[in-house]
Every structure is written in structure tokens, then in C-alpha cells.
Image 1 (tube, rainbow, N blue to C red):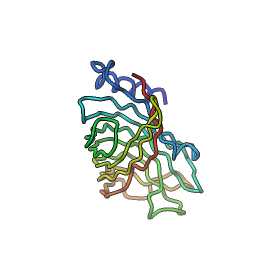
Image 2 (image 1 turned 135 degrees about the vertical axis):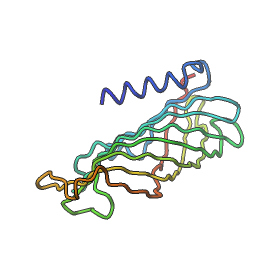
Image 3 (image 1 turned 90 degrees about the vertical axis):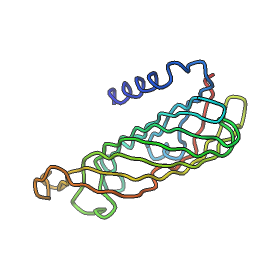
Image 4 (image 1 turned 180 degrees about the vertical axis):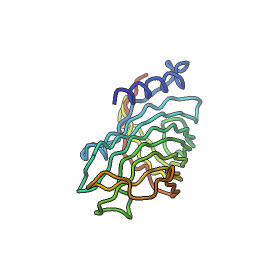
Amino acid sequence: MNKLKTFFLITFFLFFGDKINAQTYAKVNMLGLPLGMLNAGVEAKVSDNITLQPEFFISPWRSFLGNRLQIYNFNLEGRYYFKESFNHFYIGGNAGIAIFDIQKWNYLNSNQYQRGYSLLFGVTVGYQYPISEKLNIDMYLGGATSQGFYHGYDIVNGQRYEPKNPWNRSGELIPYKVGVALSYKIN
């Protein structure tokens, strides 16, 4: 967890170090919090219509409803607002990486799970509006192509269940961003 925090802070300062005085919002997705999943980020204004947002998603569950659902995701998203930054409709493009220990949908409720990483390239559509001088609500939905590289394991004995090839690979189009984020204006 400390490595993830350090990575997030370094990335933030690399991308936004020269924009510290720019309009910036810290945000957290309210949908995942009741389930113990954290999705947070920082969105900074680059121009009148463009923002950049590094964000992370953490699902720490070794077991969730009897299935593995441990995911650590980091991505960077650029957004284009049709009206002005942080206001009304936008479309975004993003790229990220996820590390996972999950049971893919076709392995749910079995004794098999997958552990590996995935590269994600996606698109987001959303709408953001102010509710006060310092607070915004950001509603969004996004999908991506997920290119996964993983090994399959048996839950009971912990051994790999497939031949010992270097990596299994899979590619899917997935909905992977759904949110209602509360955004707080930092400056």
C-alpha cells in the first residue's frame, strides 16, 4: 500500500508540478465506499476545456461474496469539456495498468482464480456540475479494452491449474469506470 501511495504522489507531481496554482479538484467516488472499495483522484485544469486526472482504484477483497476480487488500478485520464473545464458534459480518454487477484466472470464460484496484470485503454463520458463554490458532483461511465496477462491457480492447493506456459492472455472490452464522485476544489 505504501508503494501505491508513493507511486501516486510521484505521478501527481510529475504531471502537475508546474500546475500547482491551476484550478484543481481532489475527488472520491462515493459508489464504491460502502463496499470498501476506494476510487480517488486529482483533476487539474490544463486549459479552458481540458483537464488531466491521475486516479487509482483499490478493491482489497481477498474474498467478496465468496469470490476473489482484489484489484489495484492506476490510470491517467485526459478530459475535454464541451462548455468549460469542470462544468457540464465531457469526454475523456485514459490509459492505465491494473494488478489483480480475481476470479474472472466465467470462473465465479469455482475453485479457480487468476492472478496477473492488465493494460487498459478506454473512453469515459460524464457530466460534472457544481453544488457549491468548493464542491462538484462528477458522474461518469467508461469502458476499455483490457489486455490481461495472468496465471491461473487452484484455491484449494494453491497450484497453477494450466500448463506452465509464461502467461495466459486475454483481451476483453469491459465497462470499468462507473462513478458519482464528490470533488473538492483545492485551489
